[in-house]
Every structure is written in C-alpha cells, then in structure tokens.
Length: 86
Image 1 (tube, helix red, strand yellow):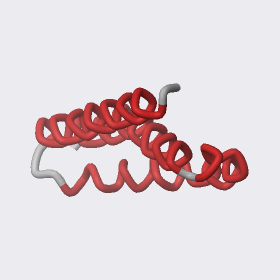
Image 2 (cartoon, one colour):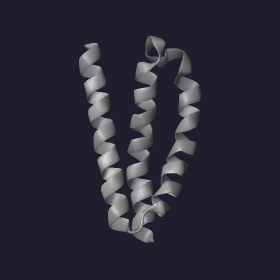
Image 3 (tube, helix red, strand yellow):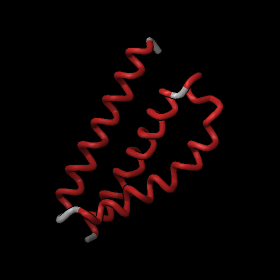
C-alpha cells in the first residue's frame, strides 16, 4: 500500500506538471492567457494521479506504469519543443 502511495506522490507530481505544460504548449500563443487556470488545475490533477495509483495491483506495477507515463510525457514535451523550433 505504501509503495502505491509513494508512486502516486513522487511520480504524479512531474506527470501532472508535464501534462499541463503540454496543454499550455499546444494552446494558441503557447497558452499565455491560460496560465492561471492551468496552474489551478495542477493540484486536482496531481490528486487524481495519486488516487489512481491505488488502482494498480501492486506497488511495482504502479511505479512501472507511472514511470513509463512520465517518460512518455517527457518525450512528447521534448518533441513538441523540437518541432516548434523552440
């Protein structure tokens, strides 16, 4: 139980941040007008990831799945920046 809790807490934080950064990046004007609403969505999204980590059968699966999601989100964010030339 504690492994799932830690996976959601530790890996959920950067995952929520990267998902919201991706959303801001793809909004018109790179989301400058949406910064405050997106920042307000960070905490509920992080809580959702933490709560969702309890759906895994074991802590190892939670760490693996959330780690893979973090890796995928990081690669998508990196690719988005490279394709946009920024």
